[in-house]
Length: 257
Ligand SMILES: O=C(O)[C@@H](O)C(=O)CO
Ligand SMILES: [Mg+2]
Image (cartoon, rainbow, N blue to C red; front, side, top):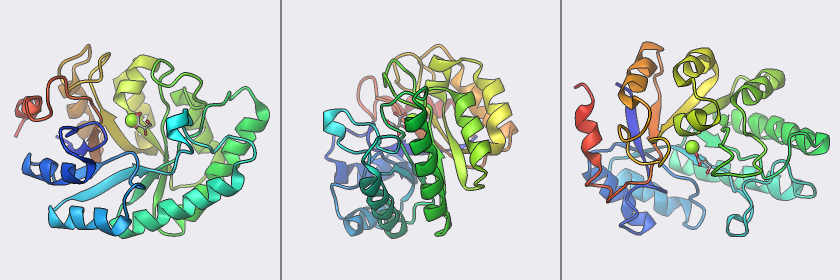
């Protein structure tokens, strides 16, 4: 079975962000991921990781003004300087936290808009080279249109095409099973076809984005398929606990030991 990382943006919300690290470790996780660390100094988060015997496997680059609805600025006009500064900031955090991969969000823009798409491609090339120089991977993640209306990257094949066209070996796909099922279905075939470019996997039930094993997919069969396909990374538990994080952790008992 794959190794699992607790997503501290969605799980352990019973606690303040910095207290979620200890809670995850106490619940048996040895790895975590989160969307954004930037509200706290990198050193403070690094202490939370080491103090709790955890490692962080993923976080996102700065997304612009999230509270005002921005979901990345890579494709947005006039934001190039801010974008590049965000790449530098993310790298400082990644190096302090020892995180090997970063997710870059595209932004709310149409991929039919040639200028927006060109900006996105340039941003991806810039960021992949910048993080690649430090030995990190850059990830892109297609997001479903129900949760993220208007998001530029809303198609897995399109994402795979971008990765191929840009030709950076450290530019990879973040395969979120929840988004894949809502956008296209065909999860197992998608994993099989895209495994060579997958840099990270995330899980949640569909359609409610709750614990694995509570939705329309056989999540445990998918986890077994990840093993069979040779996926060696973590699976991020990016789900909203249906009734409390600890109460919902029973799904782990259904994993073969
Ligand atoms: O699936 C998601 O929503 C996240 O992985 C993310 O990075 C953007 O919100
Ligand atoms: Mg995700």
